[in-house]
Every structure is written in C-alpha cells, then in structure tokens.
Length: 191
Picture (cartoon, rainbow, N blue to C red):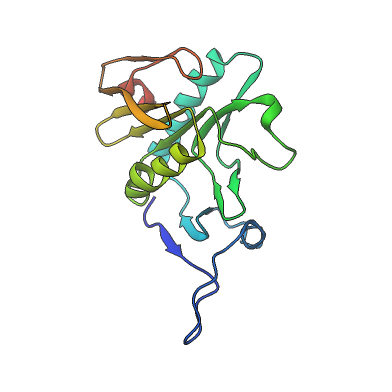
C-alpha cells in the first residue's frame, strides 16, 4: 500500500465546522478497490494492498480457519465492523461469534482483529485502530509487520490492552484468545 488519506466531510465552508461522516456517507463511497473506513466521523482511504501484505493475510487466515471452533468464524477484509454510527472499520482479519454477525456487517467488536502493517497504515494500525479496538472491547488485537517479520499481540484485561506476545522471525507465539493458535512470523511470508 502506498498512501492512506484521512479527511472529514463534507469540507467546511467559511465559518462552518466540518460535519463528521456517518455510516450512510460511507455507503456512498465508490467500489474502486480502495478500503474506506470511518473513525470518529473521519474518513480513512487506503489503496489496494500489495502481494506481500496479502500473502501474510492469507497465511494468518489459514491458521485461524484451521483452529476456529464452530461457534466462531474467521473472515478477511472487506468485512465492516460497525462500532458506531461514525466508526466503521475493516480489519485485515477478524474472528467473531457467528451469532454476532448481521446480514450486512459485524455490529459489535470482534473477539480478534488483526492488521498487517503497510507504510500507509502503520501509524493508524499501531495507534488509532489499537485504541479504537481497545475502547470498543475487542478482546484481542494483533499486528503483523512484514518488514521484520514480526507479530505483536495484545489482550484486553480490565478494559486495557496488555501485550501478551512479541515475536520476530522464526520465534513462535502460542496465543489463546479467542482460541489457541501458534504463529511464527517468518512462516507468514513464505510462497
């Protein structure tokens, strides 16, 4: 991915404050291969991911899918996570209870959200999305960095994220939330 754009809309006229976007505004965005997300009414637009990013997403999905209990479901983007009328995210991967999905989206926080970092999304994934998922009550959040390769995993404890794993290269992390799965970062980028 190359560049992420953020902007409030509609743009303010002279002397008038910007109006935050809502889910209804998000529904009007074009189907052009970009990812459109809202955080607190601000639009985030990301270009289509590069092959290395998608390789990691596919590898993590296969791990999650193979270990996923029947009452849960693993998905890869794009699936809307509607955390409010002005906050709609599309994590690279998510795990949630099957019963929590509506016909349209996931209207509650997932049990697990996973983001694969790219130059355009790195700061948002590590700061803004991290705090948004924490505040929404997402039980676990993972960030995978293809540049290293590495994985950092957090779990929600008493309303705050606590780092439970940080592994690089051939190191492995056995994570248990929302179910047990072992991740080796170097294996996520193999062809």
